[in-house]
Length: 200
Image (cartoon, rainbow, N blue to C red; front, side):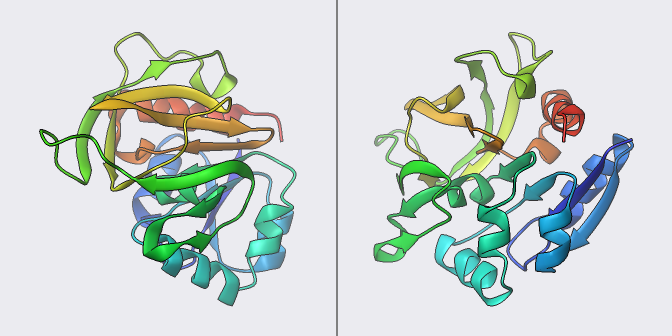
């Protein structure tokens, strides 16, 4: 069974991610130790809240470079997906991990839709990927976010919230889910299972 390391750096919904993975039979390690992160079989970077605070925590704990250099499967969840990009508009501009090109911008869905985007939205696959294997045409995921990643060639699936927004992204061995797979019922469990099954 797969072993997965969850980065526990004080800016993530770590407990619910841990429990969701354990329900799938994974062995879960929680750590903020740079050496353990570098040696992990596969890595999940969660995140809730502000990009500036999250990047400061990663920097203070010496985790920025081990995450940037991580060569095996890496999954960013919610804010963790946003941190994979180069910069964020939040707080006047936040340099981030720079693993996927582009700037994260404030969500502007139009006057009929509130910010944050909070609730269930349907996932629409854009291209095939092992992370999305087995998802049906009626896959829904649970979102809570006020910023949105750029929609580019790395987009694997979109959701609609006024305009289409990137819901799942990938660049090489790095994947991201803008939603919370640990709160997304069968679709989220399938995505986590697929991540655990990726070759390390």
